[in-house]
Image 1 (cartoon, rainbow, N blue to C red):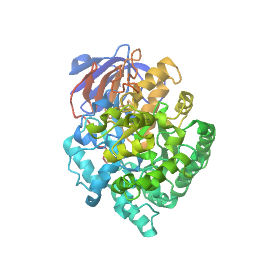
Image 2 (spheres, rainbow, N blue to C red):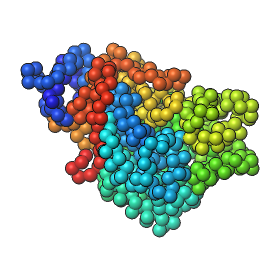
Image 3 (cartoon, rainbow, N blue to C red):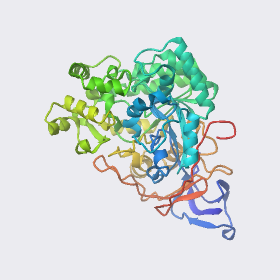
Image 4 (cartoon, rainbow, N blue to C red):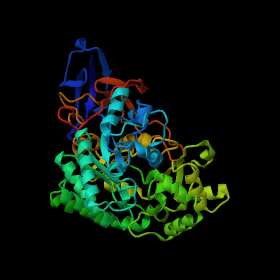
Length: 532
């Protein structure tokens, strides 16, 4: 099928000046860019008065489970995302040894949700990706192999440092999963079991990733009190392993820590001056979102979620948790300290029993349940088996803008898709265009599109996508810059954005005049010879 997108202002992703022109699509590919006869095409899209740009690349996504249950992923497509990167924060779907399925499902439920609709006995990344390929996908899906899953396969869920033999086993697993087509390795050093690792463990794994020219994507050990030392650890990993470094959702949390932002940016410059390839992604909001269980001290999670449940049921363990949450542990990002009990809100639960707590903060939960806020929260986590999502407010918009303007930056959603989510899940990319390009004029349109397309593709080694160029895959948007904006709020986040008029994925029209066509047009992207 031949499709002609005509009369649009083309913002091609390279970062150069927009220009008027037509784009001819044939099958999955951009056949040419220029001026063409209408008679030779099957479909014409009139983009007069609108911009035409590459589809957006979401470099931090949590659709990992949902994409198997509901492969269409309309939430992402309606904001112009045509490719996303799964496997984030060091804890995701694969690899997953059969003996850990029960505990691991509980561990990731707060991030990725829960489902009995899939067969969990896939074991490896290769088999997980094959499940996606068999089911079909609505947009292009790629995967990072998660550090925590590798660690679990090599040494279980013990809360301790790895032995040399266990690190060697982790490197073998990393090699196997990179050969299956992962783009790189992810870790989340506030999440279990990644939090138990020492730097040397990560360096050795990253040496394997570097052999594949992969990327190391890290939710660093601290985004708060000890963020400067945390960044130095990440830079050390890059220096000693030779891997490309990509910081997840780059930010600094908590009023007491905002003073560190300039030093953080200076460290990025130092790293680049030493030849380390550094990039980061960012969602354009001053609040974060993750699973509620991260407010508990790391020791509470040792051994996995089943062990956590026992500790939450033990009154003495609860007292110790409260002490640590009120007094802190050196090197631990204490959400209660940097956000506050009144700025941590529940966004999702697994059962209807506690659905009345969605949208409530921890202080309100205590009042509703007639208990102190800590024990009310412990009860919630115990009853929901840790499958609780949250939003936390930690920053300032002026910091969002300062980070947004950095050359290392590209855009992401980091969107959890269950319950009452953070509005970034529905609106990150349109928010950049509407708020920060059109309204606040923080970025020029060509700069913003570059950050949402080519910059992301370069950082993650995604080839033949991210720009409008002859012989590239036809992942293309038509956007109305006068209307484009995110609509979701923290109170009412489940709202689709406006102004994304057309979405074309691999040459198929998936969104047409704002109407979603239920088409599985995506591909599973593997970083293997001839496949990416």
